[in-house]
Amino acid sequence: MNTIFSTADVHPRDRFEYWHSVACKTIVPHDSEPSDRLSFCAKLSKARIGDIDLVSFENSPMRVRHTERHVRSSNPDELLLCLLKAESLMVEQGGREALVRMGEIVLLDPARPYQADFQSNSKLLVFKVPRNLLVARTALISGLTALPIRPTPGAAGLISDILAALPRHAAELDSDTHAIVQSHILDLMGIALAQVSNHRHVSHTRWLGLARIKGEITARLADPALNAARVADAANVSIRHANSLLAQEGTSLTRLIKDMRLARIKAALTDRSMDSISIKEIASGWGFSDMTHFGRMFKRKFGSTPRDCRKARP
Image (cartoon, rainbow, N blue to C red; front, side, top):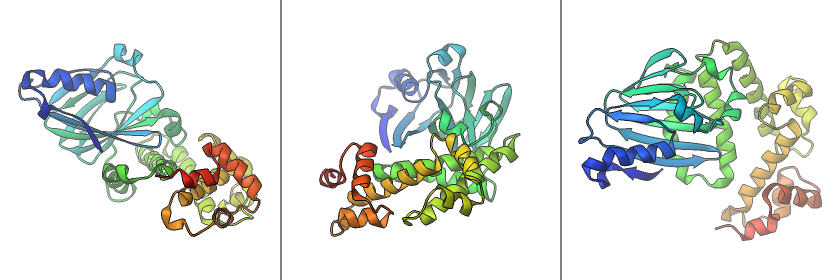
């Protein structure tokens, strides 16, 4: 992650005000008050995976208030999924108050007021997630905020560990893998939120259906005969039901198969270790037999021909 601010570079009398202005722009508008202005220390780092912003910040004790005034200037299309990496945090939203401990995850909605109290030096990792992509994977968001997800053995603990590791790897991920990684991150978040949802069965069933469909596509992606009917049959669902689930992510069986294949091909074209393999061989390996049709789809998806894509790599 790239460090975009540290109080170590600022005079003590200006540290908090400087940090507050940066934090409002980077995370969400808010009012805050430190326990001690003169000794206040903070560091803020940022990375991006696809459409998801990762913001890591370390700070001295302080109180944060996101009010109705701040709601009006916030992005209504974002949700904040927060993973506490050190110490503890008190949060309140929607009439619910919770103590969040190290390793726990909590959801906050910037479209509604909330407050948070950092009671000691803490480290928080915030995922700024497109609302529509997360809502498609879970139940009603209004019933899930300020409910800590405990990293118990099993799914919740695994998810906490994976999300915590992302900052170490985000900078090394090439742009062609971002869409794939983003999809997996969102699926994991959907599982995590299902752990605390009052509608867990509905959310979990939806997620399992999507995971099964995507898994069947991935396993058969190189098969030239793969189509919507074969995926639905392998996943033991109807085409209509599969498309209904995928519609919540803005796609369909046919489109997802095509997009996943094109993403694999683009990754291969930008990989220098694949230079000895022709574009036709790469495309054929991912199920394309008609090179003219493939070339048109590739250019429509990425804005350049496969040949130009290979030439333009760094």
